[in-house]
Image (cartoon, rainbow, N blue to C red; front, side, top):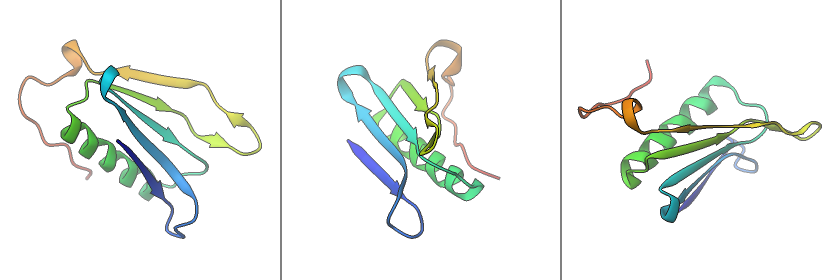
Length: 93
């Protein structure tokens, strides 16, 4: 499963979410300059994909700038104490 999120101009992709079933992993690749609204929208899509796929791992690649190339990657494994034991609803305020 792959989903590309486009900027309001509908030309440039600002984030790509990819679910790898065999690794139970969602990749979130941010691209270019991001304002608060784009980060919120991308994060909501990530939460939706986690709910749909029940993925236990998320790997987030940091923002890529055309003039600087790709910056180092960071990742979070959602296991152990990171996974809530109760059903929770995450919302932006």
